[in-house]
Length: 506
Image (cartoon, rainbow, N blue to C red; front, side, top):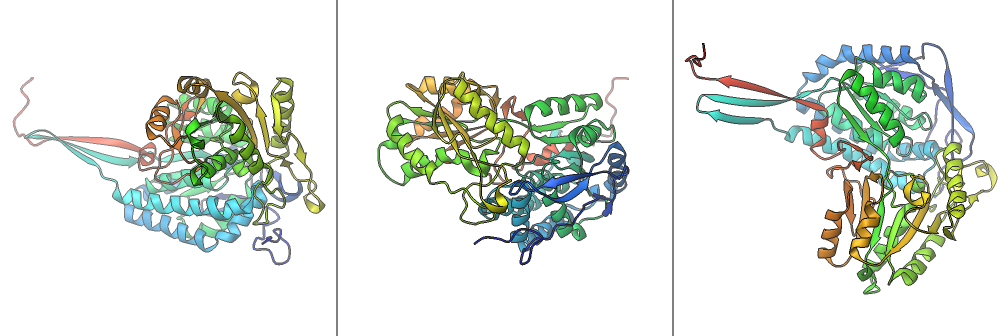
């Protein structure tokens, strides 16, 4: 099935010509009257525009958030959970429409937005609706007459900055726990992919109390920085590059507020020799596990962009993997048969292509790909790249630097110890993969790898109730899981003496 382009006859999606900011439950024009053009990665053509906001717009959003803060914080957990569930239901009812919108906005294949991105958005809202109702405080009996009570209280006004690779899922990762915990939000979507968020707000806006959720669009320097540095923000949550994450952390220190950072990665994907002991479903899954570097056009922080294959199985394993890569269908991302879509922007396309050159200049062997794809017709101006595999050594830039595209760097290893050394020889530690039929080997590898998420005999699964976050320069804090609620809460201890007698010090 091929979905019709948005704003054409028969399309599920009708984008507005222009979107204002969403502040205090209303659509508010930017103070300075400026707008940003938004291009679809599928065609390279402008399809809408959004507000180009400045510090003045951030202040308006913060006014609305602070006006709503106390009332929202004092709602019951059942009330907040009910709203999150209604949001989940509304998104599910409009899943196809939202999925097509995100594909048009981001460039990823619609089969991913239909089957992964938007269903996961739904799942995260439902999960945190349940999690907040299950969360409990604590009571500590100090002695017979003294008791400490522990209460979870919302932090207050939260600033959230969202990346362009998962415009809606990364938003859900932050919106759901923040609202569940009783906070109000001022969010800045990525300037590359703001349109799908605007459409989502139109879909759910009647479910949200005014001022609880506010969205201000704009450029990072003009909008993101004023948000992250504003003294009226009580917490900043950011997903994006490590470079920008350093700046966000610096901004947060100015006001001494907590910060959650989900940053870059260069994830190793390790294939031990026993994966080829049999020609069966497990081997087929392992080969797919290598090819998953192309999921979401490679634009995933945990992209398995470094493959470590044991030298004894390298030739046969890679022969079969390359055959699988050759079979990846690239075409119209709105075609449900297309397996890999476009890159998110012209800028990202150019970055990826520059690494094709760097890899070959470093002496890496190009096994497949290495070129830009130019499609026919209306897709000719889109941002398409061929899935690419290099063979080289871990000291090369293509092994050490985050490319954020469908580019895989492969190397071999001899021993378990060498595999661990190569895997950990990175500034990053967000994700990793381990493939082995022997669970003793797998367990030792998982414990030896310096990464926050290590998939074992699987990859690229992102359930709401599994903690996600990085080691080293891949970030601070965690996303998802029940523990995420505490990133949006403060713990108050009420220590009570039930003894009528004085302590006796004075």
